[in-house]
Image 1: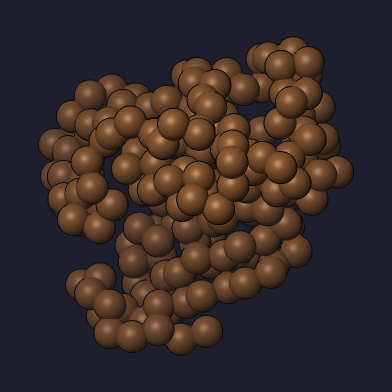
Image 2: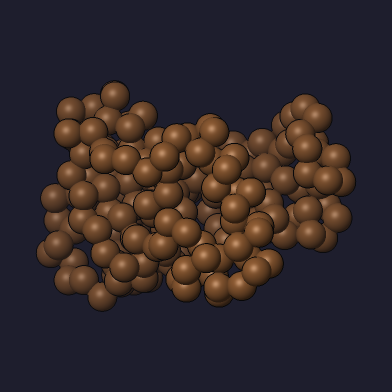
Length: 188
């Protein structure tokens, strides 16, 4: 039975697709596309020297851990669109993926009704790179450090809900970091 993932197009998102493709015959990938060069090209984040500097460090770390942008495995079927367009598609578009045994949301755009309602009914899970309920939405670990809250850097896996990153928490991992953002261990 296929697995579906709603995600984006950075190497970290592709790595999740690759891992899912290793454990099933078919992966449906609903992919919102953003620039591969945030801060350098206009997109979700504004083009600026500050953003370029920040994302250069993010991209260098991501390249080291997840590799470069590349093609997906052959058993991954993609529906690629501009980030946010998922809410403008007819529900019939999603009929094959709503039959998936597992549905995962990871760094996808805000999903609205009626699609969010269908995904909740299918018991979709969300991988959130932030510690819910303290930080929700985008760039949560950046904001935790910005707010001098290194104790709230981490990740949450929770049931998908119609609210922003507020579903029932299944797993929460908090990483202890120094003020400059260097990991020193982990704490659950």
